[in-house]
Amino acid sequence: MYEEKKGSIKVARGRVTGSLTRLENGADDLNLMNEILIHLQILEELFVDFEWLDSELRSEESEIIEFEKRFFDLKLKFQDKIDAIDASRSINTSGQNTLVCKT
Image (cartoon, rainbow, N blue to C red; front, top):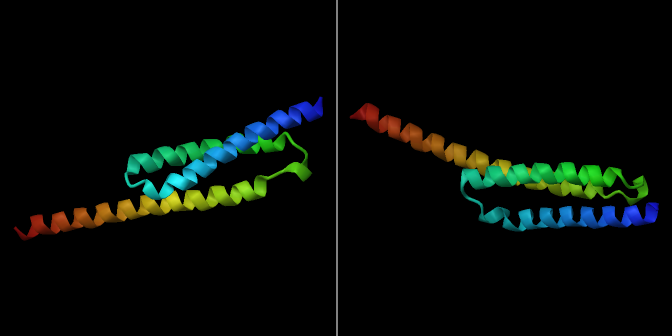
């Protein structure tokens, strides 16, 4: 019974890993804040799913360490993009305020 369950868990875990790979491959193409936030939310959901699936397997079959590394690397990439957009907005806003003050 465990072997059958283990097989289906590994397949499901593989699907989650595949979804992570797709997010990684498309990360550089994201430029809009809403796109990034949606992908960040999907990433968080994938982590929860993977963590649950991985916990159902024996520790020697765990792949959580590799998944966590990829998760945190991608989360940092998304956060850097968000920070860059925020910084750009801040510069644009302060530049606009300066123009208003000078006029």
